[in-house]
Length: 244
Image 1: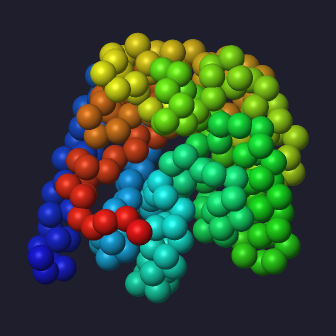
Image 2: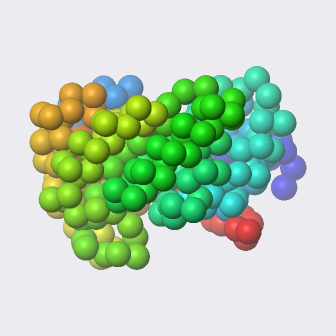
């Protein structure tokens, strides 16, 4: 597919996704600018990210560190002046923290004390080395179905993990993230997450972000207070390349 055709395809998908978000916000009595669109670009090339940036998007997400590292660098070469923030949304092993701290602006999948410690060390080192210029924003990932394979801490672990994050000088607690359980009612899951977020904000007023909702369930997430929807398939289409 030529660049012109791909740009047109992405522009149409972006228009449709934004219309969905706008309708969901109106139905929930919210303003559309209350919900950020995060483009999940995993398995898609840096050239697609560049086209999305041309169309006005600034927030991009990856779920595998190895793929993201090269893509972020390639994007920077393709669009050196583009404003872009990169999110890590996949499960993160502690031994990948050092690399992630060099390219990620946000890690949304923080789910253990050991990962908090690893990210603090990695971010401090990256700041000292000049590989980054600002602290790392983090979200606590909450497991809403007790499925270990998808990551996330238990709801009753959120408060302690959040308290720990706020004690780290190079990490900034921003809120919570979750994935709706497979086969379950997303409305129930997102209602649970909303209540967890409300309790967290009581202790940490700065933790206002709720990252929830994807291509298939973003309307339900918006109805239950999501401030960021993570959209991949509805925006970019089917998988285009094999992750390294």
